[in-house]
Each structure stands twice: as C-alpha cells, then as structure tokens.
Length: 130
Image 1 (spheres, rainbow, N blue to C red):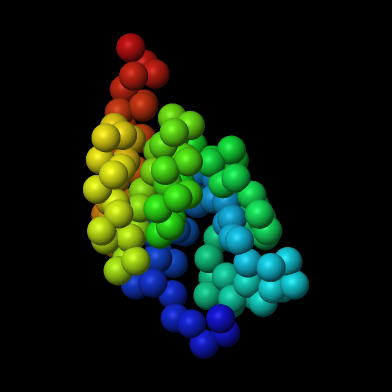
Image 2 (image 1 turned 60 degrees about the vertical axis):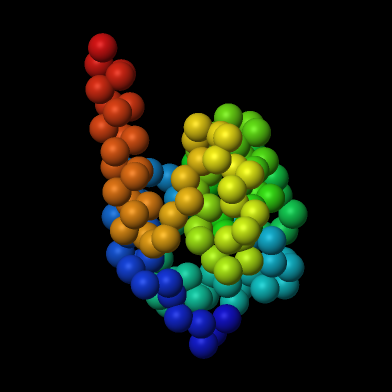
C-alpha cells in the first residue's frame, strides 16, 4: 500500500467533494491495516470525515457509493441508494446486470464522478426550492 499511487485526479476530486459532502472511507481490509491505510490516505492528502475498517454493509452508511466491486454496488442499489461502479477489468462483464437500476452509473474516472455528483446536487437544489 505504501508504494501504491493514487488513481489519477482522485485526490483533487475527493477533496473538492469534501467541501460540500461527507466523505466516508469504508474498506474491507483487516483491522490491523488501519494505521497503514490511514497513513497512506493522509500522506496523499485525501480529506475525509470518517473511516471504517472491517466487514460493513457499506450501503447502510451512505447515500451514494463509489466502488469497484459489483456486489457492493448491487446491495446499494437494492437499498434505493446511488451506486457508481468504477470500471475495472474484473467487473467489465458483470456490470450489465445493474443497468436495470435507475440509480446506477458505470464510471471511468474521478472527473466523471465529480461531474455527475454536481449535476445531482443541482437537481436536488432545484427540487428543494419548488
């Protein structure tokens, strides 16, 4: 983990999202890796509010989940939350099952994620003023 490079532009966009949203870092890594994981996030200057390590049903804690694991996104969608499946070789074939959900997005990069969340924010703000 120490030698792992952040995904391109992820630091910039996570920190921009942090300005107006709560950022939760939820990982299934073993608890003994917590200090290494938090150290990596902090050394790369990611801003976040809360971190969880261990077996968590991620969808219970968030309104929107960004993940590269199909199963986590599917649980999120089943619970009527928004799911962004980050495109990876291991989810390329299986992601088509999620297109039946209206809150599913298959995303390629952090710029796209940021843009979609901004659009959702504008829609929510317009609705709240109607």
